[in-house]
Image (cartoon, rainbow, N blue to C red):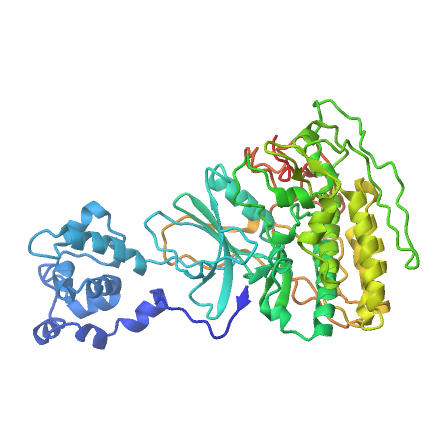
Length: 604
């Protein structure tokens, strides 16, 4: 959720409060001629004298919405005939084939009837509220305003920026996903929404609300992006370029620490991101970094090849058992990682040596190691950190991708296509890291920030280990990166200094589902239990920006990412083999296991 104080709504939304404030006797009189104004105080023309109510009292108590619609249609005088036929706001919405019964014109006017039918929904709004999932009918008006259809550079066109009534100056990111394409049913979409609802962090595009309408599922997230890391590596935005040089360098190091802290936040809750890549690393106003894509929707056809996901995926995410009974792990790393010293910056990453002529699709039929989604996150995060460090020493973007692919081309129709993935070109990645250290050593006299690059690359070396068990966990990364920033880079108070516990804060069943047409539905979203501030190390800063909402019914581990190509019934345990078990301590319900995240795979 991005706050822009100078941005205002251009649309007037007719919620209950606005209607009550607007439809006063003065307002009604301003749209009637003197003879009609005098009629307001007459007794109602129906009821055979059994009622002493007046036309004004009926409007004030029962027909404010109808009067507003008639004003917009430029037939406010028809309110008397409508009241004589006993119509009131409780009759709204009126079906299209019943609108003619209002008799708004002496002779039937189909155009005016259609206008009435469409306009009535602007006065029957069901607002989106935090934590709610709303199912809108196709004819309903969703009370939001699209303020920017142009998505951030590097994002897919399924993202836009919207504002909601009641939240002036606040911009949300909206993601649009087809039901029947990306999701098999609205219930399937709701299942994934439930899984991310309580994942709230200042450096995540955190869930705010969601709805379904006209064959699409929509999710609103905090932190609307201005640009992505993918865009940053191509063209430096002015908001970053205008910063002072040393401030820019410190900002990059802070970004790295914030990303590690965010992944640590997820992993300590038994979750994984599953698709960390430059286009899911976003930046909002004032260069605030955050991760997106918790729902994992890319907008690609299920049979399409997502090259970016492939390039930044862990090697084990591109292996698939050759048969269901296969249990052998032929692709374990065979070379032990060698840690280089700053004086001799040579990097050898623990890796396997597959046939360099293999096409990525062919790798799908090779045996697979035991997949841990969290270990895969660590590999992808290591790739991102390497991109940011390359950006810091001004060796990034296309030169890095070209270097990775220099010795590895995959055959395809029309000639060789460079395979610039990290996991297939680890030897090239090693030589690139050696180059970065040499470049950083030349600049250490200018800025202490560069003194942190060599030790940081030693950590990246282990993050990019071919075998998952050789990679450090997020908690260890957080501790070691904090020490580098404070001991080597001279950043005494890094941003995002948190110590996450191993609490399990889910509550997937507490999402409020609004499927009714009741425009006065309550705005509650379940019981909220903010966590206490988590102690910080060194900065004295609490974690007030992180809020976990504890549910009351469900204790299943929500899976943040599922394959769009094999979507089945909405069951957490619907995949094949159990891979990662959450701790049993403190659990009150049945144990649920993590499954293989196949979103990175090109085919099943």
